[in-house]
Length: 513
Ligand SMILES: CCCCCCCC/C=C\CCCCCCCC(=O)NCC(=O)O
Ligand SMILES: [Zn+2]
Ligand SMILES: [Zn+2]
Image 1 (cartoon, rainbow, N blue to C red):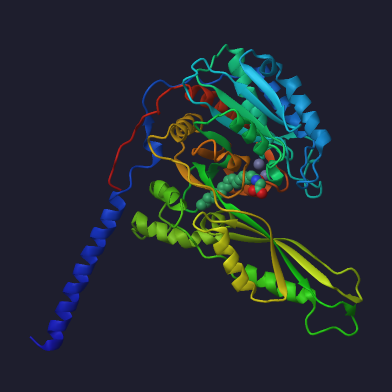
Image 2 (image 1 turned 45 degrees about the vertical axis):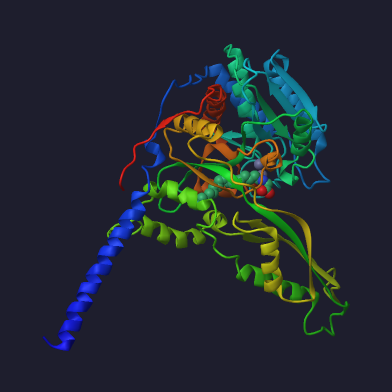
């Protein structure tokens, strides 16, 4: 046989060998996945679902509508509508008298406008847990809304208003669930707290932090904390069609910077080659055009995709791709949408830009504020280094207004009581939606609780479609009446599920995918 022919046969054999090895590696990789969590079933007794009477359904709706009408706006750490915060405090007293007068509940006002409810369980040997929500909201100028943002108007099965999702629905849902449990004579075994902060939207330094100080001074340790955060998302994650429940097991860090350029002012008829505005604009544009690196797989986002691998639809239906390859394809697609881009990298948002006073005056000072949300695989120092290198202009002064590192990752293994109790409750309330750990892309009051527990979970118990994401802090924020009832059901069942003293045990089928 000629040398060329031998080379051809050798090449074909090598190709076959590589193909075989490729198949083997892919098979080994996909073997490690278990069936999606939707296939998990729970051992042991379930808890009773709350059946709302028609009157209770009306009262629940009215309770949220009333709360939405009180404009508890936080503008900044220094400027909050404290009259409205006081009014909302009075309002919850009026709407939930059973909660405020129960002999097993101690209520205290913290730092004037926050509230702490301590519900005493019958078994004091069980470690308590905490449900958090917040009373304040971000501003809502009426332009662009279909209904006035503080009207609480009900339309076509939805209740509209600033705070409908973030986060008065959880304030009302948690209190309503507790009220219904008391009404039905339920006596909790495990003690728990409900904390309602009043300045979450501007840091939580005055509210949640003071609640933490109070609990710490009493030597309280918590089994777990549940706060707002991720949700049951539908059509948000590329390639996953059915609703999946994402529990934030960590939260992004944050850096807020001021970029300031100081140049001599003067007459606009004799402009310099570059003005303070031009220099600053170029600097912020460099930051926008050079996004932080894609860190997919280097943080807990990897856990989320591993868990959801079984749910990922093949994006090329005619090509038989392994789950591993599908994940790699999705990895690139994630960058295309702001919500999933936020999961895979530190984000850069230019939020304030100020300069100039008059058309014929060269401005002296130009200033921009830039807010970064840090991926859990990066630190404040690392991001600041990248920012300095990208700006790369000594005329731009960079000062840090506020910064904190990403939060620790809370346990989400099979032996963790808090995570498993949440998962069990989610399965029961949201028709067995698969549950996965994720990165909470916004910041919450729960970040102040790290010294009280290692188990902090950020989960808002409602469904969110892709088009709903822009309603949070945006226009036409709303919750469906059905969603509000489901959310209340969630807290109602969670409180009962937390009364078991052992971790719920899941039956899980392992399976080769
Ligand atoms: C891979 C796709 C996953 C996309 C996940 C996006 C799901 C979004 C779900 C909820 C929205 C996140 C809201 C987080 C709570 C924000 C609380 C807040 O506003 N805090 C103040 C602040 O962060 O400034
Ligand atoms: Zn919130
Ligand atoms: Zn918010």
